[in-house]
Amino acid sequence: MNLPNYFLADVPPGATLNGQMLWEACQALKRNREQYLADRPTRSLIKVLHEIGSNWLDSEFPFRKLALEKGPDATGFSAATLASGFNAFFQQLNGENIEALVVHDLGHAQRLDEMVAGTAEQKIGRASMAIGPELMAHIAAGNIPNPAFTSVALGLLTRSAQFVKCATGASFLPRMFAHSIYDADPKLGACLEIAEWPGGNTELEAVLFAEADCVTATGCDETITALRARVPAKAKMISYGHRVSFGYVTAEAISGFHAKKVIARAATDVIAWDQLGCLSPHVLYVEHGGGLSAEQFAEDLAAELARRELTEPRGRLSPQDAATIASKRSFYKVRAANSPDTRLWCSADSTAWTVVYEADPRFQLSSLHRFIYVKAVTDLADLLQGAENVRGKVSTVGLAATEDRAPQIATQLARWGVTRVCPLGQMQSPPLTWRHDGRPSLGDLITWTDWEL
Image 1 (tube, rainbow, N blue to C red):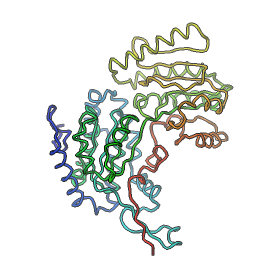
Image 2: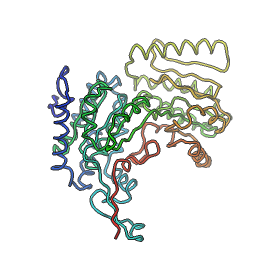
Image 3: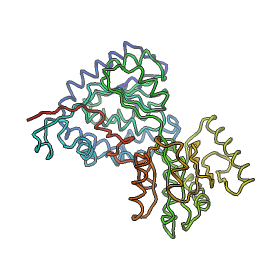
Image 4: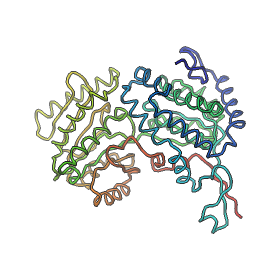
């Protein structure tokens, strides 16, 4: 399958972007938006997005096949990891979920179409309408594609022209998604641009930011700070910086036959996108007193990761990442040889997966790439004390708990500062309606207009 050169990222390697090309692309996007997108009904946009989501779940869909064929070389993820990631994301991208998102964030299914009043607004004599930016610039992270996919889908709902700037070498999957939009509806595809260049190119970014009404950015805190200083005051900036996540397994959840299911779900969270997203666990905390000790849980998890490696292999690593994992393994091998409070399990003759058990509950940053810590805790208070060093930076907690304990645990985690609690096994598969870092993903993008009747 040969892709046409619809986007700047489609041009052959070695082509050089300049400020004039970027400015012209932004003007074209604005014109196309005014002609093709600004007046599209929400229901029409939802229908197209639903069709695109269904297409990506079809194993014969040409763009999915191409993504799985060339994706491993382009992204470093194995085909199995890509397929699982696509399935998890595009199952969420359906008409029912998208309409629920609009109602969830904006209070009414037609809020983006016209002045409307919900029940509460009718009582106070007010109607409201939500307006999206004319041109939205997305500064995409370079690790996993889901945030970029989501940004583009939300941008279409807000009727915004969109320019997606990818990190160098990271545009392949956003391009595949953009081409699938163009294939489903060329007029919508004409309101979208994909490009890539090295971060920190202030000349190109100055042109883009000058034209944008809204800038979204996902990346490390240092990148976000640098971008914020360069975004003009007239443009809204929405940023998602560095976050970490962990899992919590209660004693009751690993009693009897349930233990095997919980371990499989934990492995799913470690494997998803090779543990590279902010929603991936660095640590799995296991409560004392269950059918399995934390140490036995770690050993069984290692066995599960070994089995899953056969069918869902980890992607390739850079020499630097491989060296980091090898160095950490050496450190824990020495510690395990000298202390009963540490144990290590790892794949033989590769860095494919690593499990480290420690009795010490202090939170530690993993090397990722399927390197997971398992730590023993007495209770939730013990866990939160151990994780105090990342308080305020925790995105997601994957929870394995019984129905009677889960509500209380979720409440305590919320009060401590966690913005999302989900079942273990679903950490990297948030629903479309989730509030990213505690904020409404669609609601953050729009500007409200109130009409007092």
